[in-house]
Image (cartoon, rainbow, N blue to C red; front, side, top):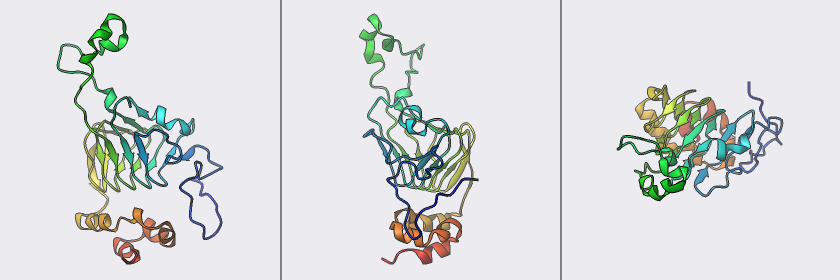
Length: 221
Protein backbone atom coordinates (compact mmCIF):
# COMPACT_ATOMS: atom_id res chain seq x y z
CA UNK A 1 0.00 0.00 0.00
CA UNK A 2 1.33 3.45 -0.92
CA UNK A 3 2.12 5.64 2.05
CA UNK A 4 0.11 8.85 2.19
CA UNK A 5 2.11 12.01 2.88
CA UNK A 6 1.11 14.09 5.84
CA UNK A 7 0.71 17.84 5.63
CA UNK A 8 -0.85 20.74 7.47
CA UNK A 9 -4.63 20.40 7.65
CA UNK A 10 -6.42 22.50 5.07
CA UNK A 11 -3.25 23.21 3.06
CA UNK A 12 -3.40 21.88 -0.54
CA UNK A 13 -0.54 19.78 -1.89
CA UNK A 14 2.27 21.65 -3.64
CA UNK A 15 2.93 20.83 -7.34
CA UNK A 16 6.41 22.41 -7.20
CA UNK A 17 7.87 20.00 -4.62
CA UNK A 18 10.19 17.42 -6.18
CA UNK A 19 9.54 14.73 -3.56
CA UNK A 20 5.88 14.97 -2.47
CA UNK A 21 6.43 12.03 -0.10
CA UNK A 22 9.73 12.82 1.68
CA UNK A 23 9.82 9.37 3.25
CA UNK A 24 9.56 7.81 -0.23
CA UNK A 25 12.38 9.32 -2.36
CA UNK A 26 11.47 6.89 -5.16
CA UNK A 27 8.50 9.16 -6.02
CA UNK A 28 9.09 12.44 -7.84
CA UNK A 29 6.86 15.06 -9.40
CA UNK A 30 8.04 15.50 -12.97
CA UNK A 31 7.14 19.14 -13.56
CA UNK A 32 9.80 20.53 -11.18
CA UNK A 33 12.28 17.90 -12.41
CA UNK A 34 12.38 18.20 -16.20
CA UNK A 35 14.71 20.72 -17.83
CA UNK A 36 14.33 19.98 -21.55
CA UNK A 37 12.30 22.58 -23.48
CA UNK A 38 10.97 19.66 -25.53
CA UNK A 39 9.31 18.00 -22.53
CA UNK A 40 6.19 19.50 -20.93
CA UNK A 41 4.57 17.97 -17.86
CA UNK A 42 1.47 19.12 -15.97
CA UNK A 43 0.97 19.62 -12.25
CA UNK A 44 1.13 16.62 -9.90
CA UNK A 45 2.14 14.09 -12.55
CA UNK A 46 4.54 11.71 -10.82
CA UNK A 47 7.04 8.96 -11.57
CA UNK A 48 7.85 6.08 -9.20
CA UNK A 49 11.21 4.32 -9.49
CA UNK A 50 13.22 2.60 -6.71
CA UNK A 51 16.54 3.23 -8.49
CA UNK A 52 16.82 6.84 -9.67
CA UNK A 53 13.57 8.61 -10.52
CA UNK A 54 15.43 11.89 -11.01
CA UNK A 55 17.06 10.44 -14.16
CA UNK A 56 13.69 10.34 -15.91
CA UNK A 57 14.75 12.58 -18.82
CA UNK A 58 17.67 10.35 -19.80
CA UNK A 59 16.45 6.91 -18.76
CA UNK A 60 12.78 7.10 -19.68
CA UNK A 61 12.63 9.47 -22.65
CA UNK A 62 14.74 7.76 -25.29
CA UNK A 63 16.14 8.76 -28.72
CA UNK A 64 15.00 12.36 -28.23
CA UNK A 65 17.27 13.81 -30.91
CA UNK A 66 14.79 15.73 -33.03
CA UNK A 67 12.33 18.59 -32.54
CA UNK A 68 9.37 16.44 -31.50
CA UNK A 69 7.90 17.21 -28.09
CA UNK A 70 6.73 14.98 -25.28
CA UNK A 71 3.67 16.50 -23.61
CA UNK A 72 2.20 14.86 -20.50
CA UNK A 73 -0.88 16.29 -18.79
CA UNK A 74 -1.75 16.80 -15.14
CA UNK A 75 -2.38 14.13 -12.51
CA UNK A 76 -0.75 11.28 -14.44
CA UNK A 77 0.78 8.30 -12.64
CA UNK A 78 3.84 6.64 -14.19
CA UNK A 79 4.97 3.31 -12.81
CA UNK A 80 8.60 2.16 -12.71
CA UNK A 81 10.23 1.68 -16.09
CA UNK A 82 7.65 3.53 -18.20
CA UNK A 83 9.44 4.63 -21.37
CA UNK A 84 8.68 7.01 -24.20
CA UNK A 85 10.47 6.29 -27.47
CA UNK A 86 10.85 9.42 -29.57
CA UNK A 87 11.22 9.84 -33.32
CA UNK A 88 15.02 9.52 -33.22
CA UNK A 89 14.54 5.77 -32.77
CA UNK A 90 13.31 5.39 -36.35
CA UNK A 91 15.45 3.75 -39.07
CA UNK A 92 15.05 3.60 -42.83
CA UNK A 93 13.02 0.62 -43.98
CA UNK A 94 12.79 1.30 -47.72
CA UNK A 95 16.12 -0.31 -48.67
CA UNK A 96 17.75 -3.73 -48.21
CA UNK A 97 19.16 -2.77 -44.76
CA UNK A 98 17.80 -0.83 -41.78
CA UNK A 99 21.29 -0.25 -40.29
CA UNK A 100 22.19 3.48 -39.82
CA UNK A 101 25.71 3.30 -41.32
CA UNK A 102 26.44 7.09 -41.32
CA UNK A 103 26.37 7.35 -37.50
CA UNK A 104 29.41 5.02 -37.32
CA UNK A 105 31.63 7.83 -38.64
CA UNK A 106 34.55 7.70 -41.05
CA UNK A 107 33.75 7.89 -44.73
CA UNK A 108 30.26 6.55 -43.97
CA UNK A 109 29.37 9.92 -42.41
CA UNK A 110 29.47 11.46 -45.90
CA UNK A 111 26.11 9.78 -46.47
CA UNK A 112 24.35 11.40 -43.52
CA UNK A 113 21.51 12.40 -45.84
CA UNK A 114 20.44 8.76 -45.77
CA UNK A 115 19.39 9.07 -42.12
CA UNK A 116 18.06 12.62 -42.13
CA UNK A 117 14.65 13.60 -43.35
CA UNK A 118 13.02 10.39 -42.17
CA UNK A 119 9.21 10.60 -41.86
CA UNK A 120 8.26 12.44 -38.68
CA UNK A 121 5.53 11.05 -36.48
CA UNK A 122 4.92 14.28 -34.61
CA UNK A 123 4.71 15.02 -30.91
CA UNK A 124 3.85 12.39 -28.32
CA UNK A 125 0.91 13.73 -26.31
CA UNK A 126 -0.56 12.30 -23.11
CA UNK A 127 -3.80 13.68 -21.67
CA UNK A 128 -4.67 14.27 -18.02
CA UNK A 129 -5.32 11.61 -15.37
CA UNK A 130 -3.56 8.81 -17.28
CA UNK A 131 -2.20 5.78 -15.39
CA UNK A 132 0.80 3.96 -16.87
CA UNK A 133 1.50 0.51 -15.48
CA UNK A 134 4.92 -0.97 -14.69
CA UNK A 135 7.31 -0.97 -17.66
CA UNK A 136 4.81 0.09 -20.27
CA UNK A 137 6.22 1.67 -23.45
CA UNK A 138 4.90 4.41 -25.73
CA UNK A 139 6.06 4.60 -29.34
CA UNK A 140 6.74 7.88 -31.21
CA UNK A 141 3.91 10.20 -32.13
CA UNK A 142 1.23 8.42 -30.10
CA UNK A 143 -1.63 10.36 -28.50
CA UNK A 144 -3.17 9.01 -25.30
CA UNK A 145 -6.53 10.37 -24.21
CA UNK A 146 -7.66 11.73 -20.84
CA UNK A 147 -8.43 9.19 -18.13
CA UNK A 148 -6.82 6.29 -19.97
CA UNK A 149 -5.10 3.32 -18.31
CA UNK A 150 -2.10 1.57 -19.90
CA UNK A 151 -1.61 -1.91 -18.48
CA UNK A 152 1.78 -3.07 -17.19
CA UNK A 153 4.17 -4.22 -19.90
CA UNK A 154 2.07 -2.84 -22.73
CA UNK A 155 3.55 -1.38 -25.92
CA UNK A 156 1.40 1.49 -27.18
CA UNK A 157 1.77 1.85 -30.95
CA UNK A 158 -1.53 3.57 -31.79
CA UNK A 159 -3.58 6.41 -30.32
CA UNK A 160 -5.55 5.56 -27.18
CA UNK A 161 -9.11 6.93 -26.78
CA UNK A 162 -10.25 8.87 -23.73
CA UNK A 163 -10.98 6.66 -20.70
CA UNK A 164 -9.90 3.48 -22.48
CA UNK A 165 -8.03 0.68 -20.72
CA UNK A 166 -5.43 -0.78 -23.09
CA UNK A 167 -3.04 -3.69 -22.74
CA UNK A 168 -0.80 -6.05 -24.64
CA UNK A 169 1.84 -5.82 -27.37
CA UNK A 170 0.68 -4.08 -29.43
CA UNK A 171 -1.74 -2.53 -26.94
CA UNK A 172 -5.43 -2.95 -27.73
CA UNK A 173 -8.53 -1.56 -26.06
CA UNK A 174 -9.70 -3.97 -23.37
CA UNK A 175 -12.65 -1.91 -22.22
CA UNK A 176 -13.69 1.63 -21.34
CA UNK A 177 -13.86 2.96 -17.80
CA UNK A 178 -17.21 4.67 -18.48
CA UNK A 179 -19.88 4.61 -21.15
CA UNK A 180 -19.82 7.11 -24.02
CA UNK A 181 -22.31 9.50 -22.43
CA UNK A 182 -20.39 9.69 -19.14
CA UNK A 183 -17.08 10.09 -20.97
CA UNK A 184 -18.50 13.11 -22.75
CA UNK A 185 -19.62 14.55 -19.42
CA UNK A 186 -16.25 13.89 -17.80
CA UNK A 187 -14.40 15.62 -20.63
CA UNK A 188 -16.67 18.63 -20.28
CA UNK A 189 -16.18 18.73 -16.51
CA UNK A 190 -12.36 18.50 -16.86
CA UNK A 191 -11.84 18.26 -13.10
CA UNK A 192 -8.06 18.44 -13.61
CA UNK A 193 -8.49 22.13 -14.47
CA UNK A 194 -10.41 22.98 -11.30
CA UNK A 195 -8.70 25.39 -8.88
CA UNK A 196 -6.63 23.41 -6.38
CA UNK A 197 -8.62 24.65 -3.37
CA UNK A 198 -11.90 23.58 -5.02
CA UNK A 199 -10.40 20.24 -6.00
CA UNK A 200 -9.21 19.76 -2.42
CA UNK A 201 -12.70 20.42 -1.07
CA UNK A 202 -14.18 17.77 -3.35
CA UNK A 203 -11.38 15.20 -3.38
CA UNK A 204 -13.57 12.32 -2.21
CA UNK A 205 -16.02 12.96 -5.03
CA UNK A 206 -13.22 13.07 -7.62
CA UNK A 207 -11.72 9.83 -6.37
CA UNK A 208 -14.77 7.73 -5.51
CA UNK A 209 -17.94 9.60 -6.46
CA UNK A 210 -20.29 9.21 -9.40
CA UNK A 211 -20.25 11.35 -12.52
CA UNK A 212 -23.51 12.91 -11.28
CA UNK A 213 -21.82 13.85 -8.00
CA UNK A 214 -18.82 15.26 -9.85
CA UNK A 215 -21.14 17.37 -11.98
CA UNK A 216 -22.85 18.70 -8.85
CA UNK A 217 -19.46 19.54 -7.32
CA UNK A 218 -18.13 21.41 -10.33
CA UNK A 219 -17.18 25.09 -9.84
CA UNK A 220 -19.95 27.47 -10.76
CA UNK A 221 -19.22 29.43 -13.91
